[in-house]
Length: 464
Image 1 (cartoon, rainbow, N blue to C red):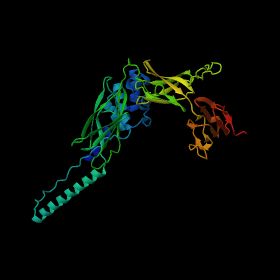
Image 2: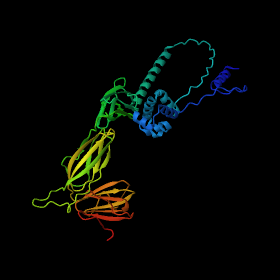
Image 3: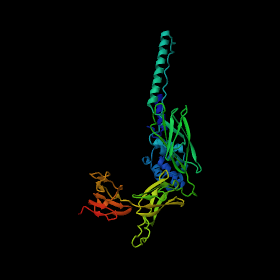
Image 4: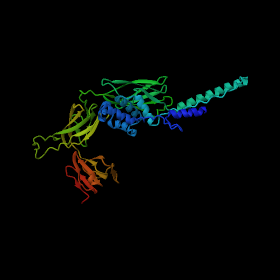
């Protein structure tokens, strides 16, 4: 039996193959559970559900479920997936490096070792000594010089053609959570020597730092409570080329449970007067889960003239109080919404609350005194074609041919005396006139034209 046959037979036995001719069967190997099965089994051993795991790891339950199903397409990207796997493995008591290695292997990135057959080298005869002539030495030196110059040119061409790379070494994961008292973090990484590193974050001017001669860079960034997002990129100052992609980092600073929401109300200003349109309500509530905007009617916009009796409740009833509006808080802690009010004096109250039941409120007094006519058109329940005339002239927004608007679109038109709206679908067209919600004026899905000239009631003009 040759050496190659012996090796092939040994490899076959190691793999548990059945030896031919002797009827023996190699040892069976238990199938290794897949990574999703390992994660699911580890969580069940821990005795927690996905929602408890979401609360403990700060990773959304739908992402944890996607990891346990192996549905990586549901995840936001490879960088986030690795961060989620590392943090989830630590939470479940698994080896994060082993989990990441199995993830790469199941995605096809792994490599299995191949059997190497060493073939004996033939016995070679001793070589004869080399003899060098002066011409051979000169030729060799010229060849080395030409090769070195060619390598130099190639390196320069590659440098100017290839954008700089960018990497972050600290934090090691793309998604991390720090202590609730942390106010800053020292980011570290590598890039091309001398490259300029830019770190962008919402609500703050970009941080910039230059890499040293070894390509190392570091800079301290400020942290606020909640989620802090940083996008890291690099630019080569010599070539002006920017790194092909940026690295996104998410550093979360937990909120203290005893803290009430921090609420700021930038608009409206106290005592502001609005002539038409919706009242803009804007501000920040970084540690709130939701913001609710409500309003209370305080009285007419213009007081009665001297010597004139005040309007009675029977002749001038107060307008209906608008329903409170719940406004979502953005990732950067900001909130914004228009708030429709009719003519009069109003107290607008903004209330921010968190999961711990803490709430903070701010109030602004404003006056709404409509001038002319303002019509808000909202498309709901389907698409609709619109053509609008403002004081007898076709609106530039719709044009002479009209325009088709999709479901959910809100458009506002303002004029001095009259606004006329023609819709191709009356059942999907809802109107608000000078802050008063009229809803849809017909439940028919037919075309119709309506004229609005307050204080007169809306009039349908296409039936005359």
